[in-house]
Image 1 (cartoon, rainbow, N blue to C red):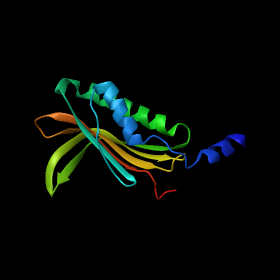
Image 2 (image 1 turned 180 degrees about the vertical axis):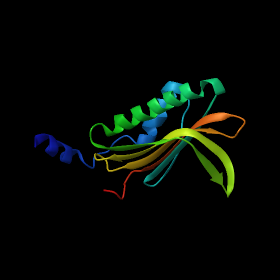
Image 3 (image 1 turned 30 degrees about the vertical axis):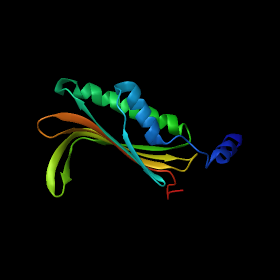
Length: 146
């Protein structure tokens, strides 16, 4: 009962934004920063990490580890993480097929401490000439889920 009461007492507290933690994690691992844009209660972040064809699987798993570590650091044991694995896919822009998704993951994150939620996509993509890993985040500091 005491553990539950402590969790309830901590709700609504300010946390470091998930987007910032992911950016810091990627900076440590790859010396790359997310492009972050903050408008009111919404934070977006994105980055494309170019990789050599022979290294793309290794780098993909390193990026996944960096992103998952940042998510777990933010949530701790007080939230929900949903991880969806992507086997393949396509990205259309203005009705035109632009890129193929080789593999990836999508995370839905809900923090029970600060009431934020986030959608995070980590994708290994190609335009038929080169491959890269994209990380895109949509974070809502005041999630309508709470």
